[in-house]
Image (cartoon, rainbow, N blue to C red; front, side, top):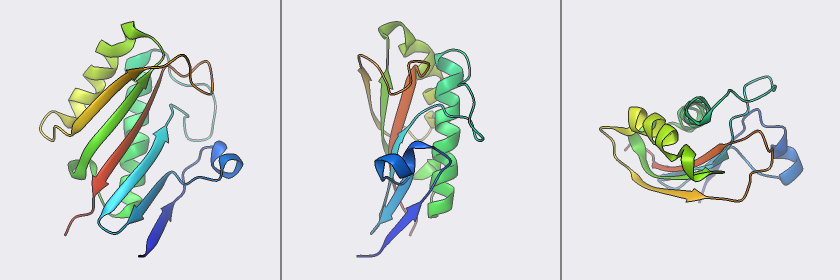
Length: 128
């Protein structure tokens, strides 16, 4: 089965040995996407802005693999505090209001960078 790797701009990709996304068969799997702005630097302030950046980065990876947000069938949202869920949900809902993928939100003890409040991963199908 052919595998198409999509690289992003995360400095962690070569360290951990992962791809931003991987298209295999009819699926595109997007790795946990943290709010790392292109070119580096600090993440945006607040869970809403961080979630929107994560979703924008996911959309870029999907486009490189030949899919779009319309093709997303599952997301997983990792939050570092319970009180962030409404802002992250608002960002997710703006993008997926009509698509409505299966979604999970999990409260975690922390993410790799303490400035990250949100991390999101996605799974999509490739258009036929």
